[in-house]
Image 1: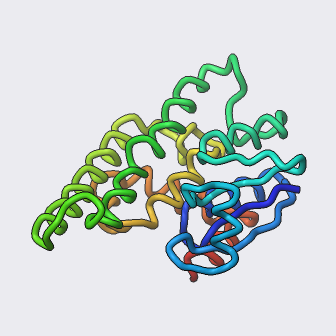
Image 2: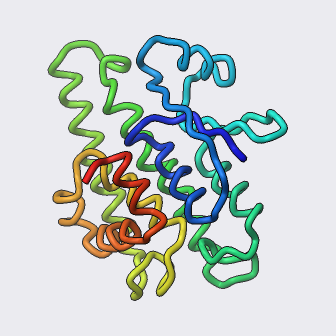
Length: 208
């Protein structure tokens, strides 16, 4: 069993969902890194950067970075169809997109959620936040341009990419605006949320 430090609606939702889809047992410790309390101090002892998700393995190993955690989970379940195996012609596209989500899109929230960390003055902060929105839309537009013909990112089957899209498309600027630039990608995210193992995770984290 893995232990996931996470908070509702955060990036830890991805790891919860992947665990559910793989049948990986996990324990969730709810922690909001921006609040004080015992849970935060417990997280700080494991990860001074207070990142969620932070995952602790059975042997005490601490893992951070969502892509690393996802790849580790996939290695534990080599027969899963949530990712194409090495040698599969879809593997390159899978790895590219898997890294694109956290490297290109996720940083826009690191900056946009806390613009006061980066610039002074409300006008500058508002301008920076809007710039992150525009960059996010541009990234989703690039995703749409490379989207295949099937109902999901990699064709006919649900993959980790659809799970990633489900979580990130819930964030700013929201699906209505994302749908304008990436309708097929958003539709794939919504199909992923209908999966019976994933639906309760999404409901717990985002309501509905």
